[in-house]
Image (cartoon, rainbow, N blue to C red; front, side, top):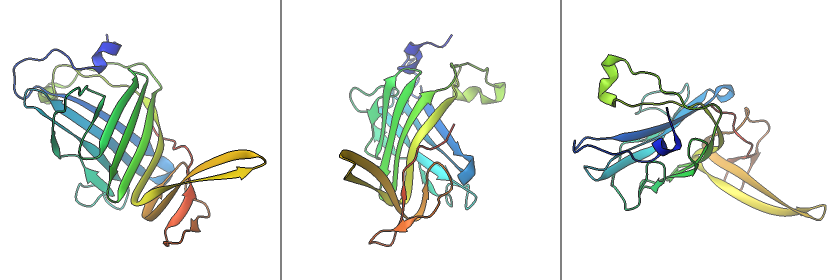
Length: 206
């Protein structure tokens, strides 16, 4: 049975390759976009790895997809937990409530991601095929809903204004290459730098 305790580091052996990993995937079918936030830790070797990747029909390999940054190794920082850490690569993962909600943020030159993952179903532990035993003896999956924004070769822009006596806030994506939100973009506008501006809406992802 999977419990909240399983979202933290488990007791480990002295095997230098002892590993704990996590994978948050998402899909936006109407934009034909898929991607993931992935991380793993090897405490016995003193390092962590994690980052972000995204792809669409323009390319699905690491060398031609929209973005790929998953393999940079960083020292295992003090106080690192399985789903509570920040890496020099620009990835931050924060556990809001074990098995229920997580915040995922990634930022690098040309790419910014800001996601919230929320539980849709309880976790379950399907057996791994014998051919995949190298991935470990323990594994579980959990279906969730991802909301947030992605900007590739772009940036995020915030603005505030008054309307009907009330303060209004908006987050917009300004992207020269591509941006992905809830639905296929409608009529975007242009900002002074020539990038397309489309108001942020919650992404429909799983």
